[in-house]
Length: 349
Ligand code: EPU
Image (cartoon, rainbow, N blue to C red; front, side, top):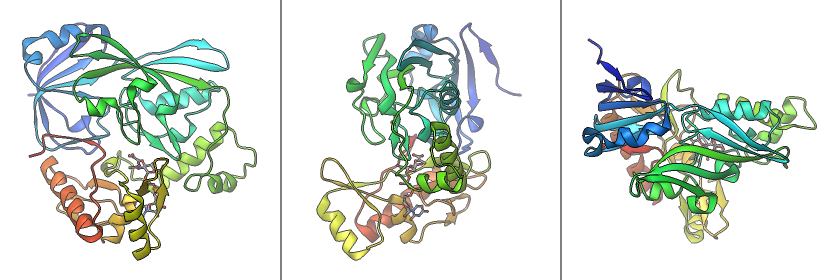
């Protein structure tokens, strides 16, 4: 019998709920309680239930940046709020978007309205509410550049907080929300999008792709199309094979270590950072360690892109996590660099 769902008006509750369809790594884990939230105003009421208040909470968007290493013995809060509101439409539009909106839908809508900025960020899975948390980025652009403020429920102060960009402390795949885990539940994100901007074509083959498309004066939607082509070619589609995008962050090391590695491995891609440190290509390190396309049971590294952990079918969260740890250990032994997971890993033992 499927678990019973109780509608509470604005949200619905299900006990012992399956999560397989709610995480793109397709881990067959369960939640003690699943709360599907459609109305953000009901959040305080929901959080006040003793069963919710006294148990761990996991906020879930599309589950595209998540590894459930075991069942979740608490409440999974699925953000299903919707709504896009243009608050002001001058040279720079101010747009408030509900946390539960799909990121890619919002990007396509924004381009369709003639706003620029998000073109390099097309086709990233996940929700708008998740975007500020790991400051999603691709092809030389990060979401933080266009986020004016984030609205969140502050579970500590028990009030709505509006955090401006500086308060969000954005960094590479990083923000305040990662440093104070559990404190804020993002309910909406305010963007400031220009009508035009200098297009970012320098990163990873975009210029070449635009030229291949036969376009010599690209508009934002041309860049978006080029990114769609690049991503589709490079990254495995979660609808076809379970994955959570890049599973490892590109490690940032001090300049001396980068130089030493570069001397031994002249092909290693190194990107100098503003602070003098150097970002290394984790994909290169993983591939050079011979792990691309490797698997153990149904857990493996994609044969298309070395950063992507894949579930070939029935891998459990624990098996995927064990394989990821093997990758970390192998790269550390070979290159002396410690990779860190990029997605949220929940329930790791
Ligand atoms: N490379 C390999 N083997 C591979 C893939 C790549 O050696 O299998 C090397 C190549 O030398 C390539 C370099 O790695 O030039 C960089 O590869 P890519 O352009 O694919 O970028 P990435 O650094 O591996 C990052 C993001 C991606 C984002 C791309 C494009 C992180 C953790 N990942 O990957 O983001 O799409 O750049 O901007 O920063 C994600 O976060 O889920 C994600 C997919």
